[in-house]
View 1 (cartoon, rainbow, N blue to C red):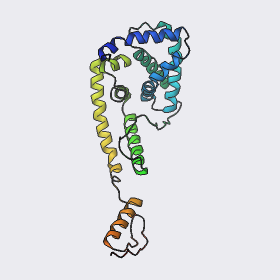
View 2 (cartoon, rainbow, N blue to C red):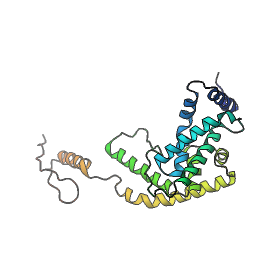
View 3 (tube, helix red, strand yellow):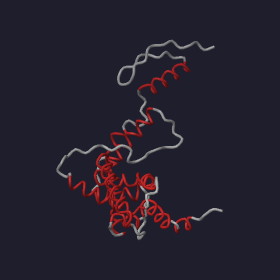
View 4 (cartoon, rainbow, N blue to C red):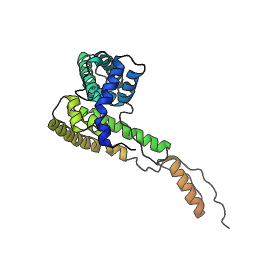
Length: 244
């Protein structure tokens, strides 16, 4: 018999409490299960504050240590995921403050946003475009003010509700909505400016694809292919096959 979404929702606090109890009592693998369940979201939250992969990983590790030590105090007043997010947010903020003047270098992130297009062949061209697009999106998100960036990651990337996002960040629901709207507006403007140079190369007919099309068309028309001057790859002259 299938269980409705509402019924599953009712059991979430019980599952949270059971998992917390398993961790406190030292059950083998319990804390690992918790980390694997929440790793991606918590890493993204930490990185939205620190804008650095290595720093976010360190903050996440330190936050997990604090969470493990404080697990006995978890009372189920909030979701375990919300409780963990608050710990990681505080840890990331502390870390940023601690190392604020240590370095101005900011590492470019990898795979903050997962971009995939089902049914599209994995060719060098499509992979290169996807990587370019991912980096463009990541940089645009990194450029958002922190207050907008964290809300955007939780709401738009992780799919948390307004209520969950507000509780995780310790802000009002109204403020959450306003920040998300402003984050999206800034991203639209930033992406619009940055897409220009990238779009110049969309559907380009240079390199092997251009050569292949030219060669096939010339062959079907019975025309010789000749060396082409200008940008692109030169084609060696060939003699078309005689049509019968």
